[in-house]
Length: 151
Image (cartoon, rainbow, N blue to C red; front, side, top):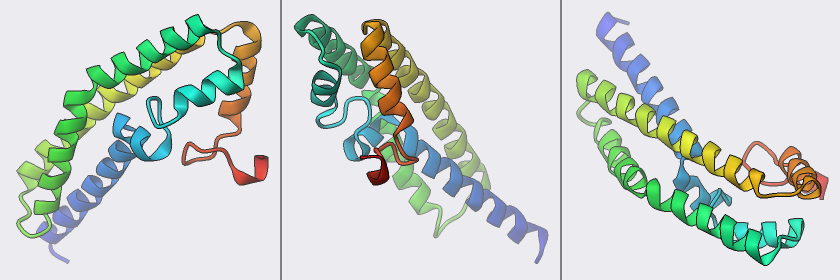
């Protein structure tokens, strides 16, 4: 295998890995995996943690603010995924690297926003609620859902 083919295969593998990671951890993950602002997440916390009305309002505000601040990145990530698909037929190493770099930056911002939001939510819980949330978190599987075995 010549050097060009090795470089091309390596960059393609990197792109697939970075895109997969970004897609899995980004705010758009909530749309299909019950992420921070995913369907029913607030209701799940209200029921499982017995949140007060004030806690529910504050946490809803956190969810909405996080979703709003990451909206541009979610839209850009959609565009980047489309551009990466174009690389299958017209691979350009420089363009691929640029796309991968931008995906990395978006992923970093997204992970920071989600971590910050989780910390804000945690700060609004009492000790019993924190223990219950810790238990819920410990039971989550690699896809961010509770394992069927644990139910």
